[in-house]
Length: 546
Image (cartoon, rainbow, N blue to C red):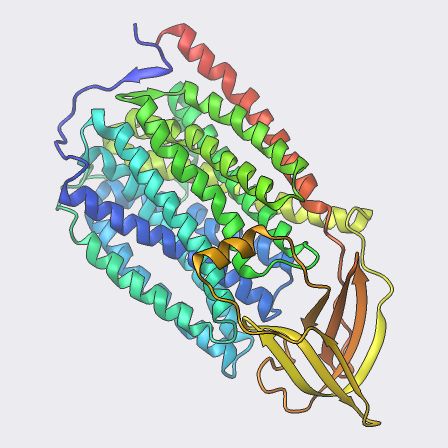
């Protein structure tokens, strides 16, 4: 009898290879879709923060909800379409739809800086929801089509390659979203132009996928759109193999969403605060690790579904999360721990995705994957709500106390506002009595963005001793005597100048410096709980010899 944790594949009809035009077209289309997903996610979050449409806490918490909510809303329809019609048609359609979504983002970025400071950011935020809708339909077709493209003995290697490139796209998309926000602060419409161009290329790549028949062309549309969700989830959880896959993948979605929020908060809570470039690079290192671990998991699995790698991955994640919490103030060590977290996450997730694809009934693969997505969004939304709750509790309890000792500095006309990489770093205010109040650091020549300079920027500790905080109504470019009130407060040894329109009350600020450590320790504890949930079913399946 076969070991339940190392399941041999059976023969099947697909005869595609890893080098076929169809598989390569799928890889490119998926790569660019994942890139745009994450680039819009990151750019929209920083855009909401930079335009003061939302606070850091609210923007970080909202993005996963916007992205994953469509997975719940459309999961039944997505599964039905993936089985009722050709998965190739679904992939091509949604790549074309991606062109329209990125065009909306372009319009929102432009309007937000050219006369519509409220409408523009909300249009950009809407595209995060639209890209979530795109993924809700694209993902069931993407994973469901794999067994129709590749023979069973290539599924583990194919999934390892697919996941590796997908997470490479996540790395580049996350980092690029931050870099582009960093470079084009005030001119974010350029980000929209770039994403629109990539969406067009991805749509062309999807056309390389060969035509294929529908898996279940006679399947009727459900009489009640949401009625099948409960029955599909029950069917998913009734099979011991699919139950392990569904639970494990849902937790993967949870921990990725939670850790992403935790690392974004890490950047926002630094004193001085990390800029978009540094924060995005550190966030992206999680995906870098997954991109390394995923193909390794596929190689170690060979022609089998090696579930014992799931347990190894969970243990590695726990230890790396504890290391990250302990060395959170040492940026190079922290980055090493985050890469290690991602690497073991790759070991954890590849066998689970392969198991779901292999054990789901052929005529219902899209439906089962969509049902798994319905479970996943519980994890993703729970991660966002948990993050939001933890931050609020920290503020209320005093673990992240409000800053005190705010002092007024000046009231008058803002005559000088110097920028460095698009961010304000120095100001001069001419007061009514003619005196000049100034603060910050006059910028030197702009630094190069060579790979060497980027690496130096990411790994070095912050050196600034004065930070400027601007209200969204204060013009960044050409202030032309805009009247402001200036106040200051100190966090640690860093002075923060707050510039708001004259007569406005500054928003409250909190000292969140210690909060990320609690978040990392919490993630380690939650991962340990999931290990306990998974270890018994996996060992039981192994001992049963099914």
